Image (cartoon, rainbow, N blue to C red; front, top):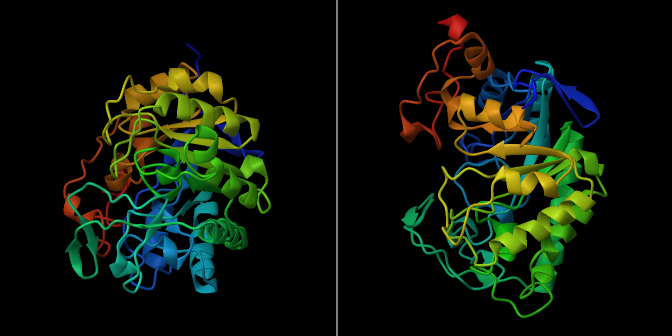
Length: 363
């Protein structure tokens, strides 16, 4: 075991992070129906720029990518301007910030698309209890399988989103290929039943992801790009029998790309498909030589152990950061950690349950 702690610095993007805490991407639904990042969101991110690295909430790359009420976007100049103000506030707190690029795919509904079906790898609907839209809770629909033109257009949308992110001043981007969203829907056989070059073999199923990465690398250096994966994930009705071979192959290929970081949902707090033994950081560390971010259900003790054992370089905290904007200081000083007290305020609303949690020394 090393002497490295969560409070030590770490080099990323050819810069030094002030600590090894990461603000995990948390979908909070405060962008209003315009999807333009706003001052309220800036308050929230500035407060939590106590983390060395801030990963934004999932941000849709296009109108077609929408699948969540009041989530932000990055596909108009007004959105770029809104994000730039937030980026500047985070930078003023001596933290780095990356934008998570998101397309919901089948985890959406025609209510978000003027009556048109969302699209995915194949016409397989999510088996779940429904999705919240502006028209109320609805059943999931069988999506429209993407044509090759749809795929190419979406690759271009990811590239344009990266261009917009760079214009907004982000230090990098994270490509969201986890939690049952579009790129994950191509990776897993649970949702991918295609018989063309984007389906069947592992090589084919990961083709879309690597086409997206190639496009994003035309905008950002590889060292400024990360990918989020959830090999154990069941969220949005995911999981496939060959998940170990699949994600081993994907991670090895990502390592060859010399990306800046891999953000892996290794913890099981978000659910587990139980198709075998879970993939842990011990499985993943030998496959990826750059920065690894562990995520999902970490306590201060388990996070400290993972960093000290060189299983991960950084640890992302989600729910603890909701009610503790000064989380690193609380852990470092042994101060009380405030429990999040009202989950009904997580996904939308105003400042209540969002930006109104005080720092410990401000109480």
